[in-house]
Length: 343
Image: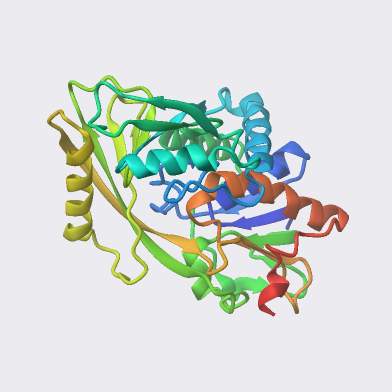
């Protein structure tokens, strides 16, 4: 029988950022994840302080970016690099009115740090009404981040590559097979719907599609967005996506979503492109657009960390630290993200 501090179930952004807290604080843990494709693993990895539809910011945007920057530097100590590319985001205007709205919104104190007062034209991209530049943005190199983190977990025997069997958990003692845990944290995304301990939390799957494309003549190094994000990848290709669909519950690639992406990319890209990969997965979202975390109402030392949504990178880095402090020190969780709002 092994005595271990934490059992982490799930290996998307929630699970890995919480694992980082264990590594940072010298806590032993095992992370259970089958290694299957998930919304986190095919995500854009965007770090964006602005809601680009109407040019607004969101709760704790500055604090989350600051925390992410610090977290990625901490990870560099054992992963060898940060994976975080700090890069402006260029929002293509649909019409002249959007430029006027941009300049108006920029006068707000909460948006001044993020919205540049300079209007830009990008030579390689179709942007007849020009672009606004979002500052303090960026993105994660998602594929290499997950590959490197899982390599680290595997080398240190932290990763258990299997599905967690709820029936084998003794909720009184937190014994699971041959392991005795002090705490268990469920970070399962949409799979929490099948979790007998937390199936009551109102996670709503939001299906997203993305495509990876090869654009031989495009040398773009910045992130561009009109309807979707166009992001340069480490392999020389580009990410384009993602879509949002709350109605489609089927796991297969939807040709209509791929068509939407193809048409959207054609609107902004003057060059020929080739789709080299199509992906889809379900984001775990919550109606109030806040994560859900905290202790189970009945079982001691059983916790949940879920609902990171489309801001998985920012929410994961910021709230994993808050949840860890709650478990270890009793530091209160923000009411906006606490599980108690659904009890």
